[in-house]
Length: 146
Image (cartoon, rainbow, N blue to C red; front, side, top):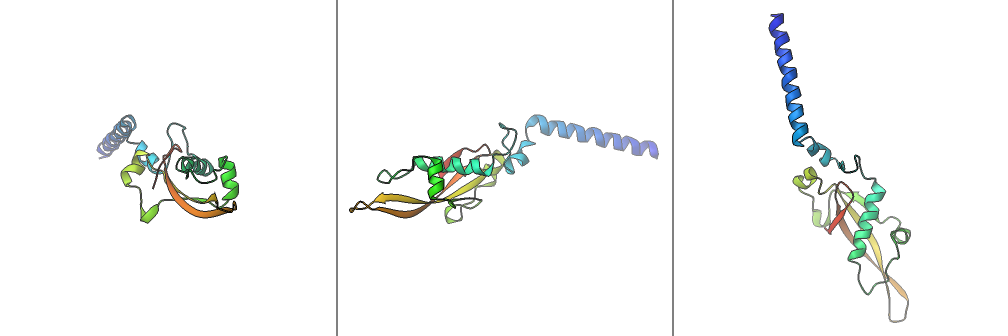
């Protein structure tokens, strides 16, 4: 009886090692790591501040032409100190599909609330609040206004 149980334990251990090796070499072990936002290129997680700065830089690409531009991300953050938050929901309750999370295409969304500054006819600066969401990859690259 003890010989049979030790053989079963040995077979179970060998099976476990084979399955683990198969998952490792097939890359499937990355799926749960991708889901939690791990960046395999950097061997770690991108910090929150870096995600926010990348989202702000991407927002500059679609900034209105008739507006007073921000000179830098630092100036933007100075004028909009509580601008940004990480969230899983975007405009109209959009949520990234599970496949995006598992592939690392979307780690999180950055919600950016900011003021667009313009000059009125009298030359005074007016401000209008806007908001956008940037989808962030696991490695901190922004894509698309959601």
